[in-house]
Image: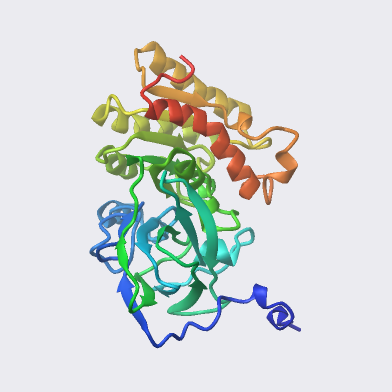
Length: 361
């Protein structure tokens, strides 16, 4: 027997009645909205994190995953007394064992202050079941607000519209202090699996800490060092690249075979790009110490060869042993607390990189 808990506590149901007679809807694909963390947002049947030209060469599953909008954001300003969000979804992702509905299909809304520092406001909460999309509404405090809207981590979107009062002003939002993004490549951890809200994946937390644009190329189960992805990354203008590839390599031998060919493609195209190598955060994993030793050895070899723009972070240092039991949902995927610790641990490295310093050297 199912229980409708929303009849007991209204705070546990999706956002309220979205009907407003004076609402005018605007597509996020159009000006004055600026979208981040996505590829070619003016065209295509749905939003993508990576060019279809590259993903199609890697199979249907890869294209599907890169069509999920993890880490994507929209920036804008408005003084509307309410915002209605209308999401159009060409597909609906079933729930996962460790993901929340809010993170997989919802949207987080943040307010940015005059210094670009973001503060969480509320979330547009999706219904438990829907097929081609949904609407949700949030009431806004009085005045003009600079807003950042974080997209779902595990759902495709063909378009998103915001409904504002017809008398409301709508204009461009603020910009990041660092506009060239930091790009993150890795597994479901990088994509954000097990965060409770879409704004709480570690790459997005880092973006807020550093006031920097980010691109999330985490791909659940699919980050295996495929060379077309490296070719794609090598053509982007970036502030830094965080190489969080380890988990999805099915064996130590596979990691050893694929790790450096991927990295060399990017380094050959961009010899001065700061690259941060991150080993896995886990305490238990097959060949865990050998994997870490291998990644560290590649870092040391590149440093010895004169590469001054390569860095290494031992993933196990990002979350302490004392806090480990509180920071994951399944001893693999970090929860919000775990992602916060990861972001806090990586922030000093990336902050110095953005300032032009050689961290730890």
